[in-house]
Image 1 (cartoon, one colour):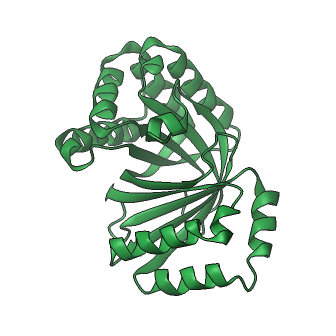
Image 2 (tube, helix red, strand yellow; image 1 turned 90 degrees about the horizontal axis):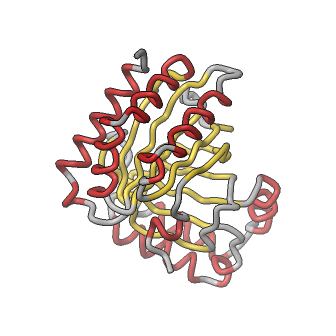
Length: 249
């Protein structure tokens, strides 16, 4: 059976990393695989995940899978990102091992082989979520950040989302701490909206906003923006909602 060697090896390396570091992140874990998908091959990738998630091993995933299409990411060659979100690193590690040993897992890697080329991968611990976490949010702004004072950065986010402005935000946000990936990045913030129009309306409403200006001043004193990207959800799978996976009541 032929499969994508680089993707398979990256996935196995991820399993090893999660396994030996499970104690470092007892809470929810995000594993992201960035890849180049040739024009016209997106449907084949979706079908590969469809088939996997319909199998017994797919149905046992303790979390969710999301496929993102990169709408903007500068010089980064990534066109798509496959994100696995698990309730804990230990549970995601155990599931990944069963995936690698299953026929469904081997078929999954074989199906991906001719349809994508891996670019990079990252593993992150979930720190905190804000706003209304909902699967209907499908337009994402991503911020890769180098944080010098994690406590100060969280305090700045807490203040913003607890403000009158933050309480009006129509979507959600997630703060992640990178465990493996780009060495220049310590944290990642993903902000979700229902669609691009909603994000544009929200952005235009922030002109001259005192709460946002205060956040920018406080956050830039403890963190530097490394890069940003825009992604759109192509499809998502899982027996657990994102709220359930992240333990949000």
